[in-house]
Amino acid sequence: MGRMFEIQEAIDRPLSAEELVVRYRTLSEDACFANVPGKVELDAWGRIVMTPPSFYHGVIQGRLARKLAALGGDAVTEAPIATPNGLFLADVAWASAQFMSAHGSKFAPTRAPEICIEIVSASNSVKELGEKRDAYFAAGAQEVWCLFLQSKRFVFHGQAGLLPKSAYPVDLDDVFG
Image (cartoon, rainbow, N blue to C red; front, side):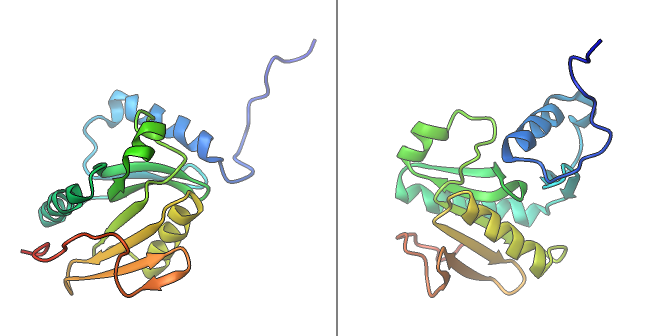
């Protein structure tokens, strides 16, 4: 008598972006996780990674979202993006009208919006930031911005590497107040 399905005893390979979306959706709908403070992400193996943001972090997210509104499209905070390297939440993302038409109604798209922004805090490592940047590019992002709260500066990356400034016409004056 054959089994209808085999129960996996251990994860033997990194999860696909689609498998990560299923796990993330399950977490998001589980009442046990309803009041967990902080941002919840999944690494490529499906492990939960949590980062509690500061109030100032949220203030900067709001300011960036307002600045990105000048581009049209939509600015999204805590945007879940399922990449080949994990399901990450961009602190802020900007998505064109075309992106929103194709992916805007998805729970966690497997395609990254055009701009993904990480607001860097003291708990972030350079390695982690590089991994997220690479993951966003692998999922189709055009630019990844890292905003450093302590030194109050932006670092812009394009698919070909470091950029002197963003190719998108966004006025980033006064983001830090």
